Image (tube, rainbow, N blue to C red; front, top):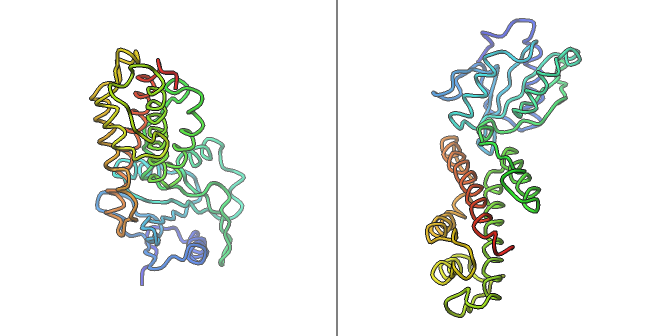
Length: 287
């Protein structure tokens, strides 16, 4: 049977209570004590378990928040896209003494703080844990890079990504790209000579990929005064559409979840960059 080796004796009851509480709340089984998480992660939490969605639920029992080891763990999860969710468990009565800077670090990094009272009582008193693998998303300055009408939806997409649903977040940005290009097609159809041949396109509901192919071949950049609507711009977006539904299936292992999250982070950042490019390129059309 696994036993605590590194945990101080005065925290063992706190650890046991946290284990009972989270086992019931999250349905955790096969809980491992002070064991390796992954060959690339140099951190052994007080205990951990693999949840049904393949995230690694980690609990570190402490009296003082946050040690350099925890900060390194958070960074390591980002760097290696390791899908951990971290609870830091403290004995009841210590929360009031926690410094505001420490609480901000926990909030900004998606670390939950669990206040524990043995034998089996505990309360999440700050934050819900977020997947640490998703915290390394590049920051975006939405006020500078995007017009006001896009900012709320894109801010929601960023929050959705960091909140643990990167597939939906990527899809939300793709939706913005799709709607923009559909508006471009509709607008071009109203401008004499903007399209080299009749569109015969259902701009609102037609298949997106053939619509992009049509625009790439037939849009007149001189008439539309949109020199940035180049074939290269179209080709990059057409390439993105090919992967739109790749993330529909849920990963069935940690390694597959790591690979998926790495891909989705790249796709999200790329989609945001492409949306910015398309907005700039189509600015003369005022769509």
